[in-house]
Structure formats: structure tokens, C-alpha cells
Length: 163
Image (cartoon, rainbow, N blue to C red; front, top):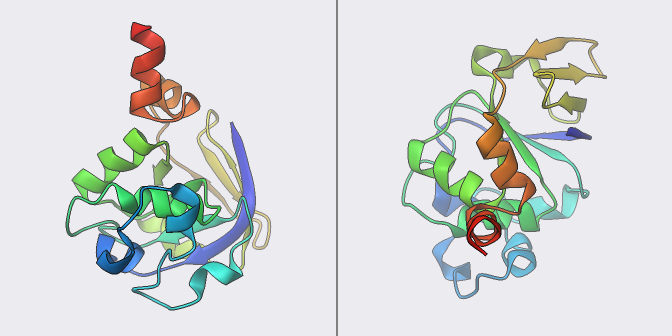
């Protein structure tokens, strides 16, 4: 599994209300939620995102309330992978359950700037920054979680296993 796209950088302690404000929680439609992704942080943010782009966040990304809509909004905005220094525990689990890949880069996250072109080799555990020429390694995602992501998240994964 490989991802290539432009980096969109947000800061530390971005909570789920900044990702998708409560006023937009009237649907679970991923595309509709995506239209309002990060409206609580920067109105119009999603207009700069192209399908396949990569979200880069700081420390404790996804803190705040347990809101399954937040990873859905990120997916609906066209982002399929998030890189961060660290994640809030419940957001981490919700993201994988909804089919959003999260990778933790620790302090190396500071080596990525907005607009950098990135290639992420998930099985190889390496992120290449085409803009700067830097290479960052990360811990691989466990196989069962990759299988869950490939199946579209937890619900679809369980349906396949049971059905």
C-alpha cells in the first residue's frame, strides 16, 4: 500500500470539534461531512485539498469528544492517510474503525512542511519527502489492522469474517 500526495499541516491538540464542528453532524454521509472538514479550524480549508493528499498533524491529534464523524470527514475531504506526532487514543481507534489510516512519526513530524510532496510506503515503513529528499521511518501497522482498513473499516471487516 503506497500513498502519494501533498502535505497539509495542522498543529498540536486539534480536537474533533475543529475537524468537524457539531453543527455539521446531521449526517453520516462521508462526502457531505468532507465538505466541512476543518471548518472549525480554518473555514474553506477543504477547498485546497486534492484527492490523495496527506494530512500532517502535531501532538495529540483528534483529542476531545469521541466523534466517529471526524475520521469520516477527513476521508470525505479526500485524505486517505494522516501522519502525526501522536494521536488521542479514542480517535486512533475510531479512525481505523472507519477506514482511515493513521501513522505515528513522533518528533520527525517536524521535518514535514505544508506543500511538501510525500510518498508513503506503508509495508516498508518509510515516508519519503520528495521536496526535501528526507526519509522518515515509522513502525509498521499490524497486519490485522491493515486487513481491517483494506476492507473499509471494522463493520465491513466483521461482515466479511462472519458472513
